[in-house]
Image (tube, rainbow, N blue to C red; front, top):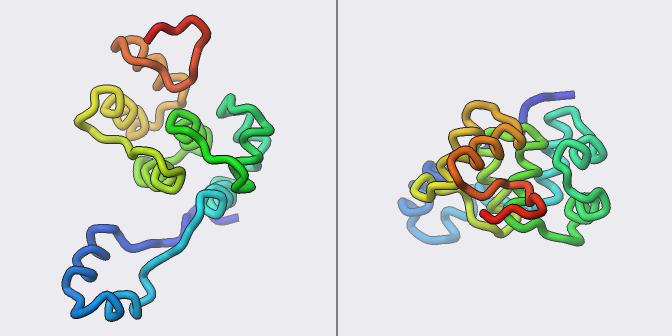
Length: 151
């Protein structure tokens, strides 16, 4: 099994090509657009990481039925559940941002205090639990909802 995701061009490169095109059709004819859905991406990540859904459910702490519904396209995760998926799958920052985009939730933004902490943790390979520890230490709401958490 391959540990590599299919190589895709950087968004910045594609944007430059689009803006330099004479027409939208000129750009579209280059075949650089993709119509990827969240389930497709999640299954590609599973394959690349050599994991299965039950492992992701256990690691992520997401309800198994809900997680399977996300993988089947029957449900969309909210932002924190999407982050829990990204951590469980061991996503790097680019993969995490793509997962968040495909889940139709806000990407991580370094100008937002909580997001900056999460980005820092992802870049250092922290687990979701370690990231939550950092968030709590810095008085920010954790990713995993904890009963009685007032943040």
